[in-house]
Image (tube, rainbow, N blue to C red):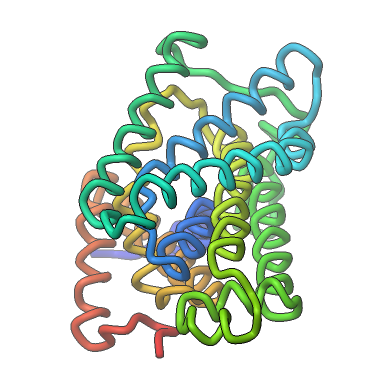
Length: 291
């Protein structure tokens, strides 16, 4: 097959931009699943909730979607902390988090979807902003601003999370709670409080990811299901609990999907990306940055 280098480089650029978005969506799972061992399969539903909140304030008040997501961060954090408290009291405290906890998050997924359908319907919704539409041309490589702006926002989110996790007391406690809760208790730190903060933080990231999603493409309530398998795959591929690993894995998957879709068709992209995941884990079971 003859390769057009212009097409190849554009596919690489598109894959990198797509990968940063995947990383933003996976950030919350990297915390909840990678650090807390909580299989929150409802996370994409909160991402879509973030999309619809960005849509509502953008359409009715003209507020930029990314600004809406920043304003919504405390609300999503409190929502996440409340959900963890219910999860802990109902399942984790009783040692029933394995199967019943999973059913709990399945329920949250469908309840959120149904609520969004009742309020907004099933039509696709989109936002308006000055950067949606124009394209930045660097030589023969195109960078659509609707992808480039979310890329910078996603990188800023990851930089903030990495600084928080590695440079703050609470961040280091979050990393420790996944390794040795007893050690935290010996230091007079309540592991449940740390987990509540961490889970609240994981849901707060959904506000930003949701705003980025609706900038990139129109959304409808069930579109989040497309990302359930992908975000857990990225989390495992990068190494559980590793923020840098999550970012690198997301970029790799984004590039693999973009190249596959460009040269072989979009229908092959998911199969090839998950095949790449399986091959990587066969030779590196702990993931790229796993210990």
